Amino acid sequence: MLQELTEARYKLECTVRDVTMKQSVLEADNSRLESELFSVRRDYTSLGSDRTDQEREMTQLRMKLAVVEQDLKMKDEQLIRAAEELSLERDEKVCLSLCQYNTNQKAYMEDVRLIVSHLPCQM
Image (cartoon, rainbow, N blue to C red; front, side, top):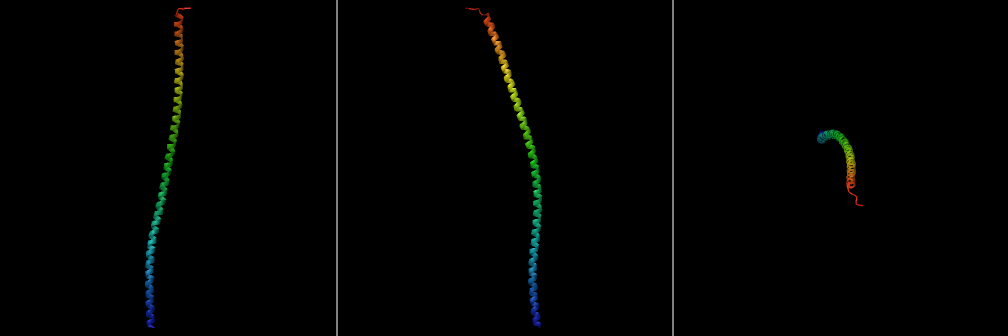
C-alpha cells in the first residue's frame, strides 16, 4: 500500500508540475495579451484623436476655401465692372473723336468756301 501511495504521490506531483507549467505559460500569454490589449486601446484612442484633429483641420480648410472663393468672386465682379467702365470710356473717346472730327471737317469746309468765294470767277 505504501508503494501505491508513493506512486500516487509521484503522479500527483507530476500532475502538479504539469499544471504549474501550463499555468505559467497561460500567465505569460495572459500578460502578453493584456499588453497587446493596452497597446491596441492606446492606438485606438490615438486614432480617434487623430481623426478628430483631421476633421478639425478639414473644417478649417473648408472655411479658408470658402473665404478664398468669396474673395475670387468679389475680384471677378470688380474686373467685370472695370471692363465695363473701360468700355464706356473707350466709347466716349470714340464719340468725342468723331465729334471733334466733324467739327474740324465743318471748319475745313467753311475755310474752303471762304477761299472759293474770294477767288475771281473765270467763267
